[in-house]
Amino acid sequence: GAGVSQTPSNKVTEKGKYVELRCDPISGHTALYWYRQSLGQGPEFLIYFQGTGAADDSGLPNDRFFAVRPEGSVSTLKIQRTERGDSAVYLCASSPTGLAGLGETQYFGPGTRLLVL
Amino acid sequence: QKEVEQNSGPLSVPEGAIASLNCTYSDRVSQSFFWYRQYSGKSPELIMSIYSNGDKEDGRFTAQLNKASQYVSLLIRDSQPSDSATYLCAVNRDSNYQLIWGAGTKLIIKP
Image (cartoon, rainbow over all chains, first blue to last red):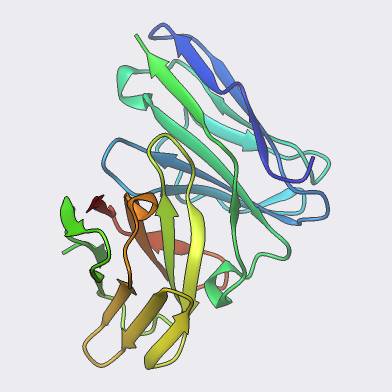
């Protein structure tokens, strides 16, 4: 596909359950970002991948959150023991080389809307 | 103090008028500044980036940067109803890859 895709588009789960959110970046983009966005807020940085490695996971809220990108393309964000406070839109973005801070455009996916009941 | 601050709005502007959106940031070493537009229920999309003090124009959009005052703004001329959206300001942190985001200003263009 031409853009960043994310699945599922919506996810409803119960408190305590495990969820996986998938991101398929633009082909050839080495940089991949996960953000979380709550209503009325800007995107909150979670983790940044450069290739297969998590170059910066300082935004992950706690050890219930984990993300992988085993082959340097598709990434999965995993949330264990979900809590109601995890409800948000989870956005994935990719960029060609990771120089978003120097002007490289980040291309966002449509997001996954997670609701924890 | 938040790292990137924006007035949440809503900012209501008549169609055809100039909409002025403002953003302040706290990190003096920031070098790159971005304006993203986000329609309701959609993901952010880049409108403009600016790196140097002064104005940068792109069509109906003008970004203005004042590093001494740690202030960046976005002007939208000849506002259209389709400009109604939330406008997010993003600033790079002390890295090449990370952006810090404001909470956004909701803009409403009234026909």
